[in-house]
Amino acid sequence: NAGVMQNPRHLVRRRGQEARLRCSPMKGHSHVYWYRQLPEEGLKFMVYLQKENIIDESGMPKERFSAEFPKEGPSILRIQQVVRGDSAAYFCASSSRTSGGIDTQYFGPGTRLTVL
Amino acid sequence: AQSVTQPDIHITVSEGASLELRCNYSYGATPYLFWYVQSPGQGLQLLLKYFSGDTLVQGIKGFEAEFKRSQSSFNLRKPSVHWSDAAEYFCAVGAETAGNKLTFGGGTRVLVKP
Image 1: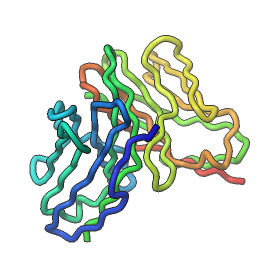
Image 2 (image 1 turned 90 degrees about the horizontal axis):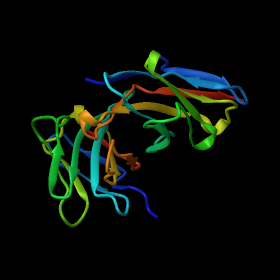
Image 3 (image 1 turned 60 degrees about the vertical axis):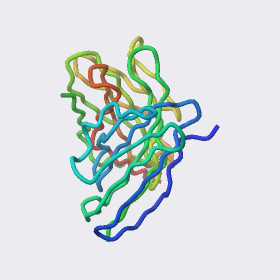
Image 4 (image 1 turned 135 degrees about the vertical axis):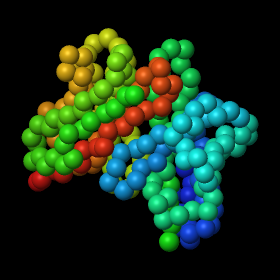
């Protein structure tokens, strides 16, 4: 039973380029979350998506960042015109929806983005 | 807004000794509490969680945590650490009123001495 999959594991971009990070949730999970981990810091929530819907994007930077979770295929976190400050580890988590309370999130291995 | 504090940035412990990692949270209602472990270069693995019920929670790898409402704490413990426990540990809190997003502490890095 495959866990959450992310690719690429490592991504190097030059300033001004675009970065696309992919996340395939665990089988049976329909909810995806993206978190960012800056060096020497904890994880910070970015966005929460269900299929074809953005549920909560309160942690997303207002510019250059976007996320989608299409009906078919993986979730994509897109960063346009990357800057050095975007260098971080980006983690995806997934969950299945429970009837009450909050969901338990299971994390992927992360994509480590380096901006030169 | 909810917040999580892990007061210890680094902890060094000898192999076979006991370990306790502190976690304090700030939230008005009953929180949902999690501990995750991150090995170097890896993703986060769920160790245990507390939603309700018994305040002493057992997790994987011999870890346990105790929820103390009066102290707003959810400390993680292990009676005898193994060298493979060297990693970074994150406490996280969620709340129904905050949707499903988790708020993480800054992490505690554990070093294990032989």
